Image 1 (cartoon, rainbow, N blue to C red):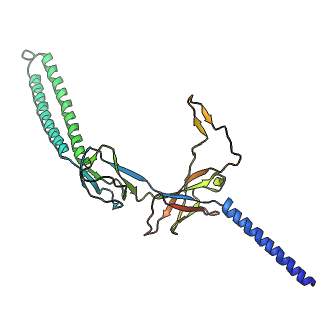
Image 2 (image 1 turned 90 degrees about the vertical axis):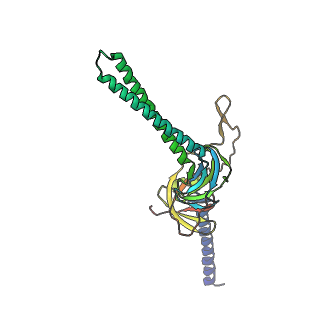
Image 3 (image 1 turned 135 degrees about the horizontal axis):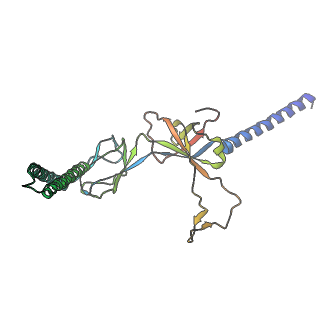
Length: 290
């Protein structure tokens, strides 16, 4: 074998070794040192809807997974007793108005009479009666406003634009005050939560660009909105004497904790249905400013 062939084989061997080292270093940096994670979740604000007044549900105007707009009627509660309460409050207000007028007229008449006809004590009593009647009239006004509000609240409307999910109300059900009957996914609140290992936190900065890859292949872009400042310590609990109950065992091989990182989606392509709770891959674009 001549010298040229030996030199060629040496160079080829060095190139192969260098390529193997470069591939190993690239793979290590990508999987162990790069700011990315497969543990990402699509999330959204969930508004739980319940009735503000109790009663039997007389009408349900939506179906499960329907898109509703802010102000749309979701379901209606029987308003018969609340309308009766409204009529009673209106009558009570009218009666208090008459009483207030009578007391005011009486006080004015006594104030116009001389001391030889009406005593000063009688005038003061009449003025006190006017004050009491006025207070009762204002109380009747407040009761009327509450009765009107109760009638309005028998119609449950969507507070935000979003999708109805977990519909758990049907005609004939009894709606208790505050009991959740359905959930509404706010259509304008979708975001991504990426759970990054604590060893990669130095590589994460608020405002850094982010690429999000959904499991169905859809790619989204966003930026880091914030980084969580606390997670639960599972090894530190409180004992019966309110003292720290520390786990006596310690694993020498410690897994890096995962810290939630909130990612704001800059834009959602038209026709891409986002589903809260689905998984995705979150990759931080390094070397670029927000």
